[in-house]
Image (cartoon, one colour):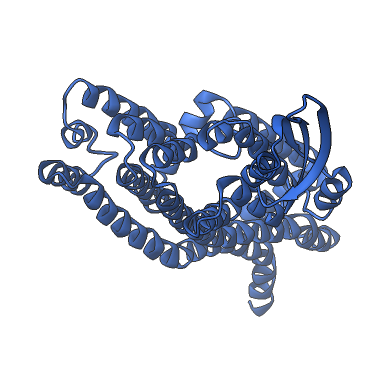
Length: 408
């Protein structure tokens, strides 16, 4: 139930102002017209205190998560399918979100829709939250009268994407933590353990092997210039972050992701899953293929593939088939993908073939995620363990030499 303030003219020509409660705006208009009043203006009253209190209860989060958007799409689809008016649907989901920024965006969207704008155009005003993927799908749903179906498909797609993203983060966070712990252990050995042995050997004035001298010199440098090393590492990290924010940096790191020996299998399959699932979703919802390719080029979140998909869109616009075009980029799109797309184009069932591809690559990604810790963990342990092992052997070599001399 909402409160509306109105300004009307009575049959006698007198201006009348007031307020009334109604389920939605149309019910309020009907109620006033039944009284014989001529409507001049009607606005929903905004309870400022209520809005401020609602905002205070919500989390101050910088980013809206995929899970938030997936839940939003699901809720909107369910409410619309149940016959609830769109404005009331937006109001209900707005009051249930837990992120301040999303609450504010939905509040603005509700006002835009209330003023007569289409939902897709209202969403397009918030590109940081609702991408072209969202806007194009909603516009298609509005045009075809299938908005609840499109939103349900969008919710399922985003839930699947969010689940895959969580698995990726879980798979990558362990190697990162293990690398940090291993680097910490190496620093402890060089700055604490090695100096203890160095003092002991200097006390006895023993003649040290070459390996031991190298390790002690490295330890002295690490201990003396530790602050400079930390500063250089921090500066390098800052440079990497700044470089990554540039277009050249994005291209460099996106190429690195799909070329790195260990992580190639993961990121390569993830990009192909995003491409096939996103394109299948757009085509299934009725978005034309040229618009679908343009939207999905950004959804793959990889500059290398984005350029290829845009080129494919241009060639398809000129009359070439999508499968034949992608076949020119065999390193990025394997023959299995291009052949499946060709079969889909020939049979007129491209969206179904892409859905099969999406399922196949989702299984591949999940398999890689399961195996990744078993590949990365031994690699990190053997590398750091080998370095620490060399340090330990180098520091104990003088003791072994002394024991041999005593026995002789």
